[in-house]
Amino acid sequence: MKAEKQLLDTAETLQALVIKNKKADGVETLGAALAAIYDAFVQIVDEKDPRIAKVHYNLAETLFQIGSYDKAVENYRWIVDHGQWGEKGSTASGSNPVAEASLKAIASRYEVLRQQKLIPVELAARPLNTPEQKVQSPSLVEWVRWIDFHASKTHANLENFYFESNRSLYSHGQVKKARRADAALRH
Image 1 (cartoon, rainbow, N blue to C red):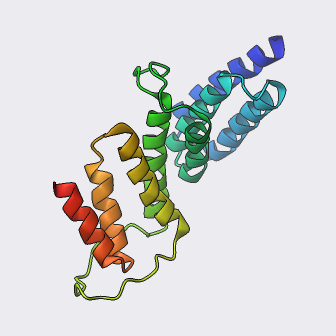
Image 2 (image 1 turned 180 degrees about the horizontal axis):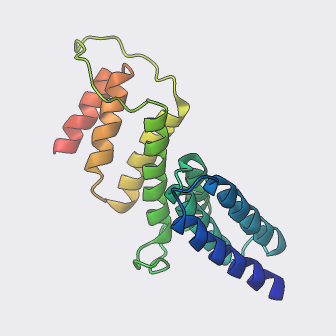
């Protein structure tokens, strides 16, 4: 339909503008406008339209570029939650789009957790017999699960994210879990 094409063309133009001006004041307003255009597109097409995943991906990429990491996570995770892990060649790199979105969701959530100061800058030593404490941040726990799940599906090398997740678990009182995960990482 002509309206669908017009929305996507407008979104593509606006997306380029947002990325070009990502450091400018007010770019968040343009990002919100882009999200509204993509939302309008999603509202008028069938929910199984394959272009919807590309819309979420493009929006996530733009949001990540302008530092709206939490909103980028939502869009990357939409792809993970609605896609198929076995697809090949649907991205510019020719990789699995779900695996790519999963990794980018992990990276985006990492940025959110850093902003919330849930990723430690420094660690203080703790005795090995420290009683395990419950991690109070559901988003941190979810992030660690995403890393484990992504690795189980892709067998990708996620050493940096494993390292940061172990440090985070350790700093939040999960000493034994962090040590077990660290030991598994080394083997």
